[in-house]
Each structure stands twice: as C-alpha cells, then as structure tokens.
Amino acid sequence: MLQFFSKYKFLAIVLLVLSVIIISSIYSILKPTATLKIYQPANVNFELVDSTLQHVKKYHAIADFSLVNQNGETITEADYKDKIYVADFFFTTCQTICPIMTDHMHQIQEALKEDASVMLLSHSVTPEIDSVAQLKKYAIKKNVNDKKWNLLTGDKKQIYELARKSYLVAKDSPESEFDLIHTENFVLVDTQKRIRGFYDGTNSEEIKQLLKDIEILKMEE
Image (cartoon, rainbow, N blue to C red; front, side, top):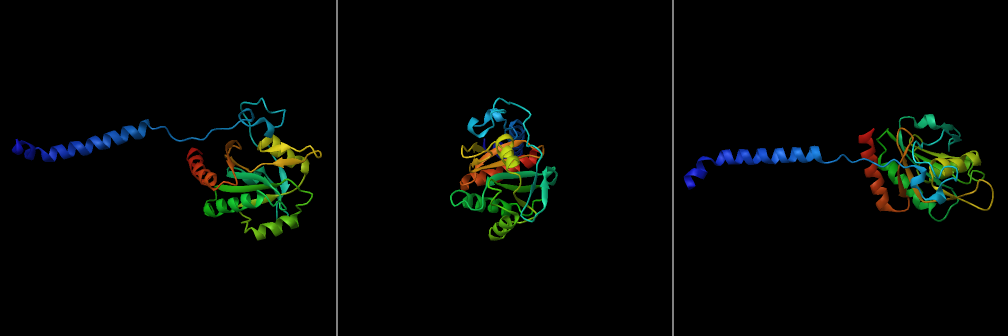
C-alpha cells in the first residue's frame, strides 16, 4: 500500500494543485463585482430634498453651476468633467461640525494627492460672509491644494438649489429665503454627475469607507 502511494505521490500533488486553481477560478468568476448604488431623490431623507424632486426615482444628476473659488476663479461643472469628486457644504465661521469635516476632507486630499482622477468641492452656505478673501485665508489655514480642492462662494440662490436639488444634503432654514441648515454629509459623485454615496464627514470610519468606495467607483468607470 505504501509503495502504491509513493508511486503516485507526484500525480496526487499535481491534481491537488490543479483542483485549488480550478476552484479559485470558479469562485472568481461567480463572485459578483462590487458596485456602488446610484442614488435618486426618492431614496434620500425627504427633509434634505426639495419638494419638487422627492418623487424622482431615476435620471438624477448634479446640475450645472458657476461659482467662484478661493482664488477668485470661476469654477463650473466643466472643471469637473470626467472626474470623480467628493462634495460638501460648510462655512468658514462654523465652530461645530465644519472644522472636523474640513480636516477629514484634507485627509482625503492627502490620501489621493497623486490621483488626478479624483477632486474635491466645498460650497459655502454663507456666501455673504465667505468672500473670496475669506475663503483664501481659510484655504491657507487648512492647507488646501488649489489644484485638487475648490472652496466655492457666489450666488446664494444657486448654492441653495445645489444643496437641495442636486446634492440632496441640506434642510430648509425658516429664518429667511435661501438659508440652509447644512448636514455633515460628504457626497461621492461619479463622472456622469450621479450621486454614488453619502458619508458622515465627521466620522473617521466613514471616511475610510469613502476612500474604499472611490476605488470601487474607479473600477466601474
């Protein structure tokens, strides 16, 4: 009996190796490729969505825009053409969640500083306070990379509509027209201007997940 196993030992090893390779290949083929959800207004908390869009279940995309960045340059959707990007809403004088959000956005900037396919975009919800000069001062303080991350100010109505009708991340403020109660949400946007994820910008674990999801999205594109 021992002689029999000794004689066919090499064949048994070869068959075992082939079996492992075949099983691994079948698993790889059958294993579903990771993809990210495409968010529509109907999928989002209704408080964060303009009433005209709460019923929309398909074809939602970020609207065109034209605002001004920390360097006084006009930034439009064309500057983000064919880019994956992370967007949020903040204001420079905020002392609660905004500093944490900005620090986490900076963390994303540093993690992806060599990746030209991904950009960042922050919108001020108090443009009457956040002038170009104010944004520039804030950008310097927070080590913002101008080539990767734009801090935007401009028309208050346009910023309001972007938050409520495009990015779906802010509540209406009863104080005055076009005032917002912004949330801690970071929004992941794909190259077709579709929302692919929402993340708590104050939560370090969700930032890690966001970075992972960016890699998944890059594989989809």
